[in-house]
Length: 150
Image (cartoon, rainbow, N blue to C red; front, side, top):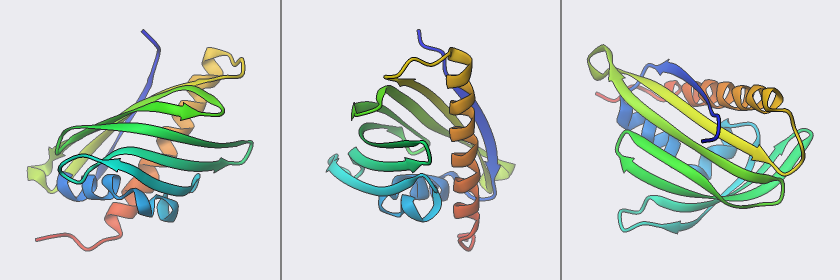
């Protein structure tokens, strides 16, 4: 089983509000930093993204890849790599858990990355940690920038 990196953050919003931002791929370029373009290629019967093409520019790493999404509930989504120029694997998930009577959400992000170029495992884990921390910080800022729903 591949090693993965995991981190969590608490966001001052309901799980539904957090998931709404996660599911809004078209707006990722506004808050993620590294994602320059996001295009939903396929949706499920409920209108949720099943495949998304992402164009990334993270300085030294520039890549275009397609991810397949699985929506396990209103509080969990996972993804896996369909195709990429630089990656062999990109598997991850967001798990949301209500806290503080449902007015806050603990978001746990898990990620496994495998690149096509040789790289030490410790360097990969460090890169995963940076990706996760930036994503969680960006998600928190984005969600908390909207007025709280009654």
